[in-house]
Structures are given as C-alpha cells and as structure tokens.
Image 1 (tube, one colour):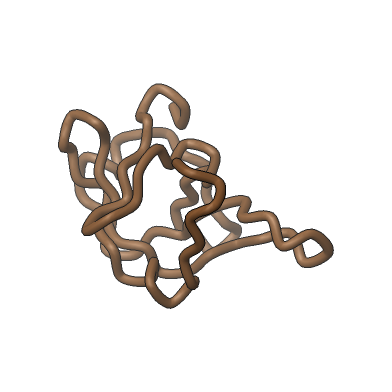
Image 2 (cartoon, rainbow, N blue to C red):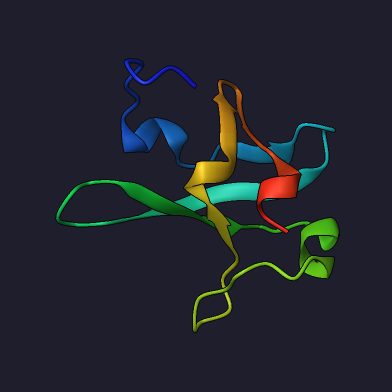
Amino acid sequence: MAEDEKKFSKQLMGKTVVSKAGKKFGEVGDLIFETRTGELIHLLLVNPTSYTEKLELEKTKEGDILIPFSSVIAMGDFLVVAEEDII
C-alpha cells in the first residue's frame, strides 16, 4: 500500500474485509489506533462471517474480532488482508 496515499477513516468504515483468496471476513466497524502517534493498530470487524468465527483471531474483551492493520495489503472497494499475517 502506498505510504503517500491518504484515506479518511470514514472512507474505511463499512468496507468489506476479504483475504487475497477472496474469503470474506466481515466489515470494518471501527478503527483502533495509538492516540499519541495516530498509528492504526487494528480493524474491528462487524458482521463477521462463519469463516471468520472459525479462526482463532484476537478479540476485544467484548468479544469483537480484531484484524491487525499491518495485515492490510490493499484498499479500494474492499480491504484486502494477507490471511497468513493474521492467523
């Protein structure tokens, strides 16, 4: 992903998260970031798919699924994540 390409957080909300192979994970419900630096840490998934529920992904104490932002490899109509970076 190009470092100089800026996106507003509201542009990411509601986007579908998929793997490189096209497996659907769910949608972006929120972003978790480091307040001091502004660095994005995690995507919080809403409407997770049954496929996602089977994976042992990190969760919040409320049980919401987290996807490390570092695994995002492309942003467009979808957010594409490298599945090998999150499992």
